[in-house]
Image (cartoon, rainbow, N blue to C red; front, side, top):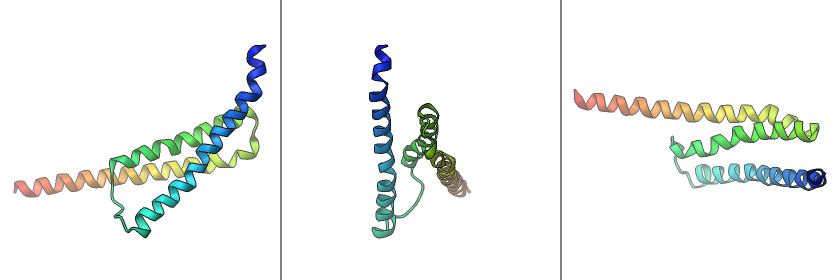
Length: 113
């Protein structure tokens, strides 16, 4: 009974925090554009990019779970496409990691000969 009375409050705060998290996405895109296009900072692999990739996947999964739990089916297109955004970001970062490792190994092998 007590928890049932808290349900509207908890649902409201769940949506509030989800909306807050959603507003970070355009801001991160704008900041990335500013950093790499306006300020011409080179786009090369950095281990810190993984800190942005994990939340992309978790955003898609948590949005999907929120839709199921709260019957917010009008939001169902977001995780359907956003999981591919997270997967693409993961693939780009992983390929940057592999490229950096291969380049590092190649240069160390060249120094030995």
